[in-house]
Amino acid sequence: RINVADGWGERVKYPGGGAGLIKQTLEYNLGIRVHYYARVNFDGFKKIVDTLGGIDVVVDCPLNDTFPDPDAPEGKTDIDLTPGVHHMDGKLALWYARSRWNTSDFDRARRQQRVLRAIWAKVRDLGLLGKLPDLWDDLQQTVQTDLTLENLLWLASIGAQLDTETAIKSRFIDTRSGALKSWTTPEGAYVLLPIYDKLSPLIAEALAPPASNRAFQGWARVEVLNGTTWQDWGILAADRLLWEGFEVAGIGEAEEKNVQRTRIVDYTTSPKGSPLGRLMRLFRVRQEDVIARPGERDDVDFQIIVGYNYNPCYRAWRAPTPTPTPTPTPTLRPAVKP
Image (cartoon, rainbow, N blue to C red):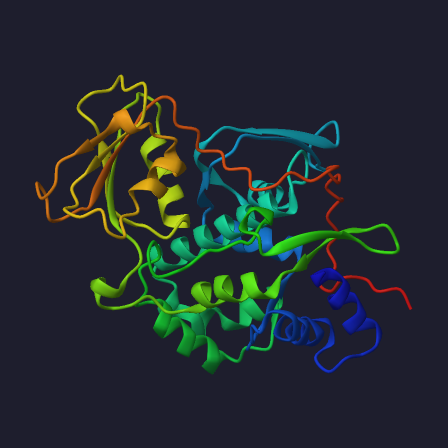
């Protein structure tokens, strides 16, 4: 568990502290080399998001929770987020990323990835990458990192060339992958253990750079049309596709706005290696709702017309017992008992 490695690293004064032991733990267990780290406390996180003017986050699952809020008259605030695109300030983004109510660690990890992607998108949209030297002093007051300004500028030059939607991979590994098995520690903690022969290929795929030649790419080009009157339904479907490794060729509105069941239009000319079955499973599309139009278009491989039956909420795994969200504290490093 990452938090255990962090605490032990601080306690035993491991080289690099908790972050140093986290790096070593990830490399030893997963073969993932972590070159740098950045740590931000809760107040710093909220400050970053608020400085950006808030962020737009795609919320795929409803989230209802109550959080401690010293600014509220009753000392707490209820949040009720429905699926769609939500503009969040620092406080709401922190709550969304940390909520544990009726969700699993996998759900929370996905939400945290969504928030990080939203922050990155906003930084790019505001053109802040070129202003890093001017912002460096302020960042050092908020973020603890072993990155130097030179490191950051080099990474920013690479990041500026990336397509946020297709070149940045977001992956998570859950029990459905077959790469993990549950285990209870002697202390009674519920944990997951890796099954390395199945986990290694998943990690290799996640870390592999996207191929520049489309003939070697594993994804398909998919156009998404919203066939409902529900706002953001097309965006939610496109977001699911991106998470699953597909290329979203476009998002639009269907001419028909009363589509009850999601449809797939297949423009491919050969069933060999076709991801059609995967798309049908992702969107729960019946065979009778697949329309074959081979060769009619060469700019996309599939078109998905999203209907009212589409459920954007993906629950990878449900924890046996939800853990209440702890009260935030303003410490930069987690407290470690001697």
